[in-house]
Structure formats: C-alpha cells, structure tokens
Image (cartoon, rainbow, N blue to C red; front, side, top):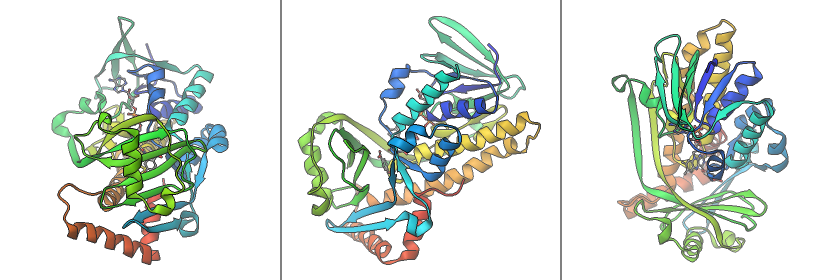
Length: 388
Ligand code: FAS
Ligand code: PHB
C-alpha cells in the first residue's frame, strides 16, 4: 500500500489530521486498533476552546457543532461550601467556549471520512513503524489475519498514550516529564437536565465538576481515590458526594437520575520530547497528557494537528521550515496548557496528605482570585485557550 502520510490512530487527532490533509489534496491512510463502534463508545472531553471551534468550522466540520453545541461564556468555581466565583470569559478576554462532546466530534469526523472515501482501517493489529529515519518510512500491520505494509513519505503518530509511535523514537533520545496525581475522576452521564452552568468545586470532601452534553444529558465528576472502582460507587453514593461538594444553591437545581455511563479516569501530566523524529511526527495524547481539570486534552490534540497539517501542506508545497519547527511550535503551546492544567488541578483537588493549612491556602488563593480582576484575567485567557 502507498500513501503520502500514514496516520496511526483513528481518534480525534488522527482523523482530524486525515481530514485537513485531504482538504489540501494530500493522501493518507488511517490505522485504528479498535472497531469504529468502540472508538465511538468512549465518553471523554466536553469543552472546546474557541480556537478548536474555529479550526473545525474552517475544515467544514462546523454544521452540527453550531446547531447542537452549547456556547459557554462563564467559568464558575465554588469553594468553602457556599462561595461561587463566576467569570464572564467574553467580558474578560473576548472569547467564549463551546460545550460539544468529543464523541460527537468523532462521529462528525467519521461521517466526513465516509463522504470522501477516506481509508480508515479499523481493528488493525500489530502496528509497527519502520525506517522512520529514512526518506521512505513504512508501517506494517495485520488485519483479518493478513499482514500488510504501507510505504509512505511521513508517519503521524496519533495513537494516544498507549500507542507504539512514541516508543519508535529511540529511548535514549526521549526525555519524558511525568507527574501522576494521587486521585482519579469518577464521571457519570445521566439523562437529566444539566446544571445551567459549568461549575468546578473545591471542597474539603474533594473536587467536583458539573458539566453537560445537551439539554437532557448531564456530565458530572467527583474526585475519588485511585484505589476505587466503579463498583464502589452506587448512584446514590455519587449523588450524595456531589451534593456534599457543591453549594446548596446549585445542588437545589440538580435533578438526579440513574447513571447511563460510569467510569474512573486517572489524572496525570505527561510530556515526551522530542515529538518529531526523522519522518515520524507525534500529535495529541501520543505526545502529551494533561489532567482533564483544564479541559485541555482534546484541545491540545486539535492544536497539534493544526500545526502538523499546516507543516505537511507547506512541505509538499516545497517549504520545509514549518515541518522542521513543528515540534518546537506545538510543544510551546503544549507546555502552556500543561502548566495551567497542573495549576488548576493543584488548586481544586484535595490531596491525600493535605493538611488544614493546605486546605486554607487553597481557599485563600480562591478568595484572591475572586477579588482580583487581574488574577481572573490570567486564569481566563489560559482557560479559553492560548492563541494558536
Ligand atoms: P486518543 O487516545 O483519543 O486516540 C488514539 C487512538 O489511537 C485510539 O482510538 C486508540 O484506539 C488508537 N490506538 C492506540 N494504539 C494503537 C495501535 N497500536 N494501532 C492503531 N491504533 C492505536 N480531555 C478533555 O479535554 N476533557 C476531558 O474531560 C477528558 N476526559 C478524558 C477521559 C478519559 C478516560 C481519557 C482516556 C481521556 C480524556 N480526555 C479528556 C483526554 C482525551 O479527550 C484526549 O485528549 C483525546 O482523546 C486526544 O485525542 P488523540 O490524541 O486522538 O488520542
Ligand atoms: C466535560 O464536560 O467532560 C468536562 C468539562 C470540563 C473539564 C473536563 C471535562 O475541565
């Protein structure tokens, strides 16, 4: 098999990259380990930076987004039980956010791929990268018991944290930065009207987050010990913990109901450098992971792909500079989001070894944030997304 760009990973990064390249007349083949249905069954991100919205619209992927997406223009943080800070992001920095589930983005990307006969090979197994330092790299894989080989100009590693692409960069050439948080997020979906606002909460019981997917689909999270499993969390226990962590005024607006999805995600900050090696270029979770506190993971995948697609398009047009600079360009924005996500995670969560002093210091920082427009502006410009 021949193509210009072999893309490993059929999640948001890989499929958006194939879409942007196709729009520029550049061919690609996407290899995805799971089935299409499995990828679409994942419940993940829900908040899009405006840069992500504009990238999707410019790529011709904005139709459903604009009809079903929910524009957010406030950041809401509760603390000490009854305090609530609300920052209008548009008044503060002239930008809004959009609530639109990652699952819907993935559906839109697959539908667009179908519309252009994009080759996405699902259930591809034993994917392996070869000759990435040559000018004719290869990818081998097995599908339906047969072994196949793709000869290409470039390989895009969009295979997430557990994929093989990052490992194809020689270990002695990689520097990995890792911070693992001593808690996870237990998330549920319920077919109930969501709280009208997206709200984070710091409480002495732990972190909570109230979000949404649509007017009849709520998304809630509570921090939980890493040792917990979903079996430890009945719906009743979830709701009572959520209500213990948010102000009564917001709890009174929440309609409970049975969970239709329940999962626990670990939290980590991770960056691997470099993200380019020979003809291999990483994008998205293959290169970095952020705790979901700052709603950055999916948005960073989009910004990486924005830079990588522009670099490959320029390369094929005879200008190699953007591709040579891709790693540095993408990582500059990645580290900005990594630092912000670490800061917000450290501010809002209760750490196992936390002392009463630590809790009071967190609450004092939230008091200062509440009192200082300058502090709010600094938080807001990072939350809505630094410029691409
Ligand atoms: P993805 O992991 O989405 O996609 C990688 C793809 O590569 C997968 O489909 C995988 O099956 C495939 N793959 C892996 N190995 C392969 C192989 N050997 N061969 C072929 N294919 C292979 N972000 C937020 O902003 N907000 C959130 O609330 C949030 N919640 C999350 C919850 C969970 C449980 C997880 C895991 C992540 C969450 N994220 C969240 C982050 C998430 O949205 C990612 O940032 C986003 O999916 C990144 O997209 P990709 O880089 O495409 O990686
Ligand atoms: C979500 O809606 O899933 C969501 C919102 C904000 C976050 C993380 C997740 O920071």
